[in-house]
Length: 147
Image 1 (cartoon, one colour):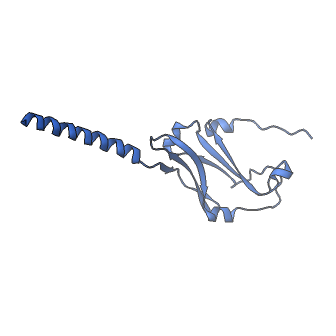
Image 2 (cartoon, rainbow, N blue to C red):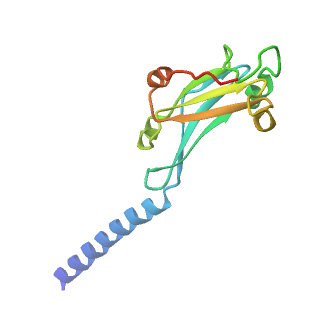
Image 3 (cartoon, rainbow, N blue to C red):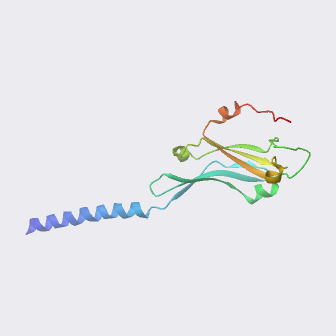
């Protein structure tokens, strides 16, 4: 009988440990990891990645503070797709985002909008998620629009 009690005890203990690790994994919350903050005019911006319960990326995005949104320049003398000085940022992703196909994000503020005028003719941000490195993106040539 004494041996039977030991067997029962160790069986219950093993079951409790297995159940405990099972419930801990299932109770694990998704995790949001923040990339490095950058100065964007009078505010800040950063990338973020949300990992699911298994630690895999499920969402990727960019956050901007109200101060950044409220201090970007609007209008002015520049026209067209404005990559004016101070309106272009290369944003790094959190290290855990390496499980996605993306290397970095390019963020561009267009104070006058850009073509086509009817769609994008108002001030706005463009966000470009790149799988290439920033250096490879810089090597891409520009094109001249036919008049």
